[in-house]
Length: 284
Image (cartoon, rainbow, N blue to C red; front, side, top):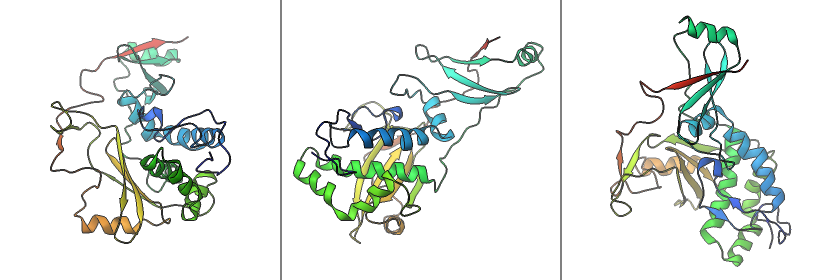
């Protein structure tokens, strides 16, 4: 067995590969040991996934949706109240708390000199972000493998296919090309729920979903949605023009699901609401 990215022997590799990070709620889309070698797995975790997950949008997304890391920790949210503080969530009861290190700030709160706390809310990821681009490239290769897994002959073909080498090198090294384009848009709201009686009689949440799109121009695209943001990336070359062309031809419908079968329910609220409680702790 060889790693699909670096092509080196991976028979002794011990780590499984999560196509989408566990810290984005993925527990099921996993590739077995050796498909991605331990070295590539560790590199992707530290140099690509961690960098993306620590960006303000993804950190806030995980915080307000109570998505735990692989260590079972919900990331903290940054806030302003007379200074910078982290808001953290109790995993057991979901209560938000803030730890205050500055006694002057505590006194201002007690004396009612401070009335507002500002919590920045990043509703969209940064566009044209190279870290996100490499992150999507890694997912694209792994989704392709996932569609053929566990057929080893087909996985070997993906490993050796020269047309995929540029994308693999971009993910592993990040130097050529300088930027691999991707398309980004919101297709449903973060708090939306869905109803499809073929799947469930009750509304359900979609953390992420993905597919591969073959266009009439013989290009292959990853299309993935993470909490309502759809990203698409061309596995064939660094340009995204073909997907834009496909969107125009198909009235901007997403290839991820059939809107006639799956209905969006948008009246469910999440995140900060009027009346939410917040506990303050003094740390001095």
